[in-house]
Image (cartoon, rainbow, N blue to C red):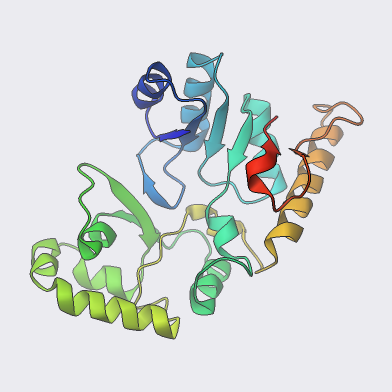
Length: 226
């Protein structure tokens, strides 16, 4: 599976033999491109009719999943929504920051990668615009010269669950996330919401499931994409 943020990248992934291509829009958290999910998804879906296309970026509820399926997607990939779950390996303070977000307080920045010492040429990360990011905007060179001190500060912030001083990659769909809940219950709720919306709109036949799972909602390796 290869995650792409441009049509050309998606095509090259297919040519290279990818089994699944993820079309991720700029609304998503972490490393993203600059095209929105809606047009990118349709471009990739039209261009790759013989490969399963998964849509990501800005999806956090049943309506978003239903929208992606109506666009022609074979499934969705949710990131930020699952950061705000009991099982996510994040401090509670970070999870609460996602729940409290209105979706407008994120920014595309290279600062998280610079602080981590990673090199992602031409890439941006969508991150919570907090005190840490504000301090280093436009000062990336100075940040590189103070990496040891900055990393210690970030580690301390994470240990304390201080989302204001830490580095928290999150998508704009944080504004749609209202609670921290168990991942299994979340999957069941999202599937039920999606099915209800699609049936209400006449886009899903009676008895046809949105998500087919072989054994358990938590056994992700056994998911059947539809």
